[in-house]
Length: 348
Image 1: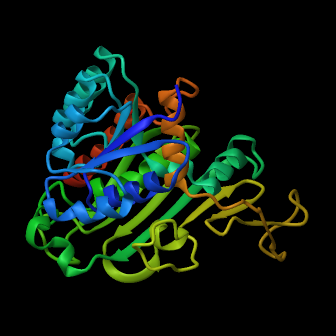
Image 2 (image 1 turned 90 degrees about the vertical axis):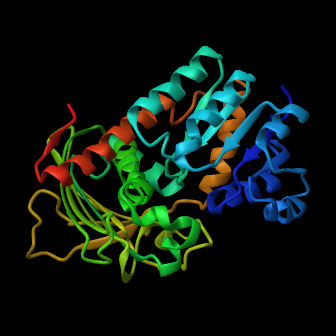
């Protein structure tokens, strides 16, 4: 196969980002785009591709090998079913779905139609996190002891207004929209999750949906991760703001993840290493040595689309399959359950 021919379904915030990436890459051919909002046809003009107000019209009229689906979660199943039935390979924006039942239905429809399903957990393509994973798996920092994650950013009022009012209701909060990224990162970089315990608060806005969480995660190998999460406080710490990989967010040079090993500690995204000169006898009475790991910058969204193209060509297996994404969803929903029960939830 020559360059895979791709269409885009959904042109909201993340869909528009995918569109910009598709229009800039030479590894794939961006054929057409679609969205139910006809006012977005100006974006298609910028990208130099035809615009369709109904994605089925696009599928009828254009010759495609695959599609990037970036529609609301509740539409993931029907859109995926339509595309799979036409033999189109699918890059589906995270989460795979709202619940495990429809997630399994998506997996089944792609399997029955013999098409590839890649779920867009894009942090798996961040070169810094790829390097962190290597450092952990090779024990470059010694045995991993635990992880600290901090995400504290303030969503403006209009984030919850108008057609986005669903975000203020159950299921529309930071657990499913934002926290799922951290859960997938933990699974991908550190290993499987055995249990979760969450305390959930509504103190930030008083909405029906949560806005603040404190979470303890037990990872395989007797390792612990802690997460503090809020979308209601002015702050400069959060993956999107700290990595700068999405221009929508103001950039702050901060660390949002810390990986603690027996021999060294590694901070992300600065990639700073902390350790003692004498790893055997060193301790809190000794100065910490600070060095860094150099990681060439790469755009995760571009890497993801290139990977999707190679998946379509049969050159690579999906980095995040439907089954893998469903395990991330299961762990994320377990956090909701734990917060509701105010008790730990076992996953294994």
